[in-house]
Structure formats: C-alpha cells, structure tokens
Length: 470
Image 1: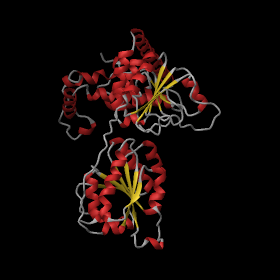
Image 2: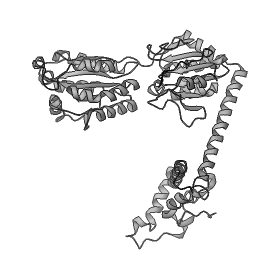
Image 3: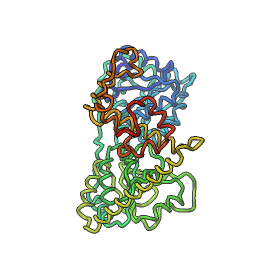
Image 4: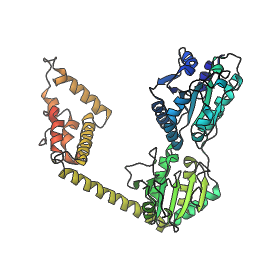
C-alpha cells in the first residue's frame, strides 16, 4: 500500500469524514489519492487561515477529530492565527502539512522549514514522519492526543517521499482515552459542603461545559442554588442557555470590574472556565480574598494556575456535575433550599422586568428616524414569531396550511386562474392564520409595535391578516 492511500485509510479508521485543505505541489500525492476516494470528502479553501477556521468551527460543532492539510512552511504560517484560536478553544484537529522529500531538504529548497518546530508552541504534540512503517503509529498517536482530555490540535508533517512510497503496512487500530473523567469523591463532597452552605454562590462556566455536553447538569445545579451564571471572558461556545433567567452573560475583562462583580458573592464555582484572561494589567487583584473558589476542570494545568482554590477537582463536567448535584441536595437544609428558590424567583422577575422595559423602549422607537437598532431587532423578532404561527403549531396544521395554500390564487399560482379559494377556507379553515395578530399570541400587538415594518410584512397577507378580525 502506498503512503498516501495508507494515510487516508488511517483517517477513516479514526472516524474522519472531511479534510479541509489548500494544497500545493507537496500535497499532490494526497490529491492523487483523493481522485479514487469515495468516503472522505475534501473541502478546498482559497487561503490557509480560512481553511483553518473552517476546520476549527467544524471540530467545535461536531466534537469529532478534524483534519487540515496545509502547504509547507508559508501555508502553516498563514494558518497560525487561526491555529491559536483552535488551541484556545481546545478543538480536536489534526493539522498536517506537506513537506519536501527528505533527500532534498538538506539543500533547504523553496518554501522549506522545520515544520514541527513552527507548530509546536500552539499544539499539544508535533512531529514528522520519517519512515513509512511509522505512519500508522504516528497518525494514531496524533488522533489519540487530539481527542484525549483536554482536547486540542496536534501537528504532523508529511514528507513527499513517505506519501509516494509503497510497502506492506500494518494499519493497527485506534486508541481512545475515556473522556468522562469523574472527580475524586472526597473533593466532590468538599465542594458540595461549600456550595450547600453558600449564602451568595456564583458560577462561572467555560468551554469545557459545552465540549462535554453538560448544559443540563449545570442548569440543574444553578437552579438548585439559585446561583447566577457567567461565562468566561472570551467564550468559544455557548456553555449556558442565554435565555435562562440566571444567565448574566460573559464576565468582564478588566481586573477592577471583575473584582467589583465577584465581591457580591461568597463562593465561586468555576466549571471549566479560564481564571482569568484579562485585557490590561492592573494593580487590583480580580479575585477578592473573601471569596472561596471551587475549581472543576479537565485540564490539570488550569487548576490553581493563578488562584489557589479551596477545592480543586480534576474531572469532566459531564461526569462530575451529577455527583456534585446529588451531594449538594443531600447537604442542603430546608432553609438553604428556600433561599435558592427565592434567588431563582427574584432573578426570573428581574429578567422579566428588564425585557418588558426593552419592549417598551422598542415601541417608543418604532417610528424613529433614522431606524434604531433596538426597534429593528424587535420588528424582526415579531416577524419570526408571526412566521412560526403561520406555519402552525403542529404537523397537522402545517399540512392543512400547505393544502390550503395550494388551492388559493396567490401570486405564485397566478397561472391557475381557474382555481378559486373557497370562502370556507378564507376565514375558517385556517384558524392558526387568524391568530397571527392576536396580541396574546405575540410579544406585543402588531398594531402597537413597529407599524412600518409590520405593514410591509403584512402586505402579502392582506386578505387573511386583519387587525380587527375576531
């Protein structure tokens, strides 16, 4: 088997479905192999930074090993900025680059450089294949390293002579490290003791929550404690539902402001969050001395990196949070449970008040000139809600609506002038259409909010969208 075909076979063993790339002459062997490849897809980008960004987004969204193929030293250099982002996001990416033939590199040919050395500062592991027999071992090692907690990018240089060579190769088998690391039981109980007794707890959620798909577990804990939730300073993922009343957005990035926020609380529970990446230096310590820190992270490097925690837990959020929730429930007194419910209720009422105030402000700005962003956003939300009601609340209603639309002489059916809409369908057969302008079905009455945009949106529906319809 040739090296190029062996490489693609190894990627398929590792579950890879797509390779992102921007090829040059040193990557031509792989392009030849793709000419007869039916399972792997190759997505071409016109510049390495874009290719790296595409792979980063795909890796974060899918959680799967993703492969990028770049063009020697300049291609790798072009991708370094996006590789930095992938490292910060912990994206499981195998970054590869074509390299000149090994018997040619001594002359330092065009575009040549020591590729593993260039990539090493931004990846978990970096190497180059020097023998075809080592290709399976190095590919499997790279994949295992990228997917092992904490996940992150790795780099492998592929010389042209390795890809063109032929030999009998044992492809071996992939290795996987179990990602669901459960925290130490003693540490979990110590954390539960602090959280159950906390008077003003706060949670800071990081990308590890989304990477482990632990959203539901974190929401359960936050609601149990009535604890507000911030995300880390520059989140790459959504670690907590933005619509939840306990959500407070991203933490600020200036030390005095961070301290001002944290001084309100007595216990900080950091779940896979970065503590702290600040924007500017400051003489103010962002971590108040009075707050107790509980730090859960899958990366031992992050635990206690900048601030000594009262409890440090090495573990995966998905595997550890359920144990913490159960332990907190056991330890909470009736008074603590009631206090948690009060904090949750207060947050719910406060958010409802803030949203109502924004809606009123949007109403007031509906006719302003020039167009105000808040009014435009509100009108768009109304349009989306109106469209959802038009499609119907259930599949049966949607099916009826499609049947009715196919029968009536709307502009897109003008050729069928002999088809007439029965009067029964006009106002009775589509009850969900009549509810479009019911104020109880919308955030606001269409007649009161953003009338200019609403008038344009209703123009195509004049026969069925009547503000005065009963």
